[in-house]
Length: 113
Length: 115
Image 1 (cartoon, each protein chain N blue to C red):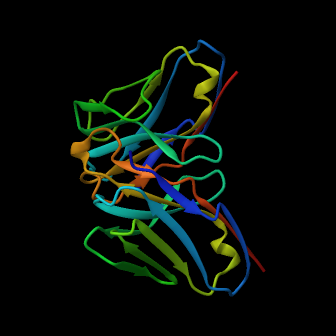
Image 2: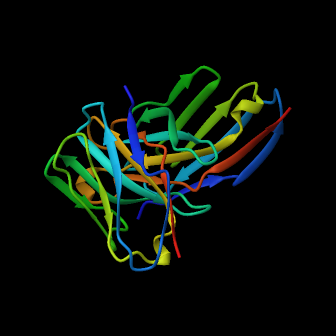
């Protein structure tokens, strides 16, 4: 049981490039989340999904897109990368909604230069 | 808007000392509160989850309390060890019916336990 996995671990992008951050979970969780963590700050929610085919915006969705075609996978797409998107990105999942414990992946450290 | 504050931002203690980390939140209408541990360069590990109807939760040397009416939670670590050195984050869950911020995080307390 791998839990929540994320790839890649590190990435450097040039301004204007695009990429997809991958997230997968093998716990059959319905809810999945994407957060970003800036240095010295708490985590902020980018997007979340309550099940396959259903996604919704979080607190800071601008510049990102998501899809959820399966229960297991929840990729995060960055279009036209900007320096402001330099951050550490965490994917998380939970069986149910916010009242349930969230399990986090190890994170992807992204630098946009 | 819910805001979560953690004090102190950093704490250094000698090994063996008992310590308390503080978390406060501005809106008492929460479902639960979670304490997480984050090691440098790593993801978050959930330590304790307290439902809004509970007063405290214990796991080993950790005890978390919740006073919803006053908007406060504490994480008590007994007999601290160098391996406890990490950043500790608290997060409160809001009603998902209220929109798009199901978990609101504090900025964390960076704990160093000196051998």
